[in-house]
Image (cartoon, rainbow, N blue to C red; front, side, top):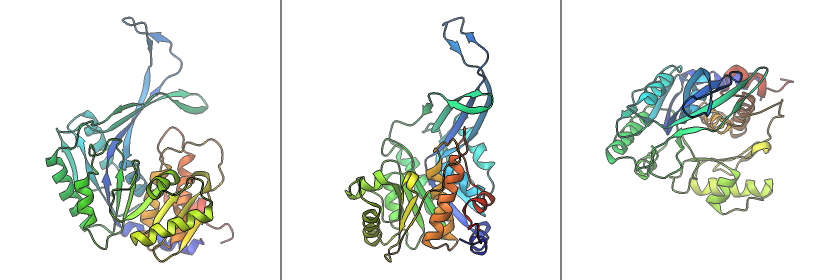
Length: 338
């Protein structure tokens, strides 16, 4: 991709409106001082002294963070949080992001705020050491009244958006935002650019743009996990034609593969690693950049190039779930000879 084409695509980002529907959570980082050695008087157990607390949107919020970093004109999160302290922090973190419109985000006493608490043991001159995570989740089905409000919010946000990203982040079906009720409503939307990703797989999703990793593709289609790249391209083409939608498969160190309904297929290899990495958030950066670039008129290969560059930027950000700005993408993905 040359500089002129890159600029042509990213110059459209400030005019884009995007809806992000899914499981928003609070990423809460506890930075722990490594030096003081204390024990609790009551229990005798070690005391961890926290010297800093950082909160940022996680889950679907990581996608939102990446869209905000790209400078999109308007981003509408659709999801819920609880009427609790974590919900307050999540809403404050969301509203702090550029371009975010909170009209379709719900706070409800019927749910707890999905939260990842990540203790980080800090080391001078070294990357933080992440300790065991503490999670807050919902273990019961999302109440019908909350589901109804989510569907209404989702359709309203999608109606005013150039594109939509749908992220299913929960482990137990029907306990989050993406329920069968919501999927049924989204399946009736026509002519919309919608990209979906789910950690539980996309088997029950309507035919929208599917983004998944190799293992998830294998589970969905029955294809072998050991397919050669050429065979994987053919399998992806078959699924794209069947759904009449793009298909994207992330291949870790091998990069990203994409197939279009018209039979076009492309593969962009991963960029070289430049030192220590942390892969957390790379997939969400890929989702954000694929969707934004396609909405801005990028070709299949251009979208893969931008998404691949974003993943490379993010994995080199340690101790946080990172994002990639337009300037960082420019420095990463442009042809050096352009």
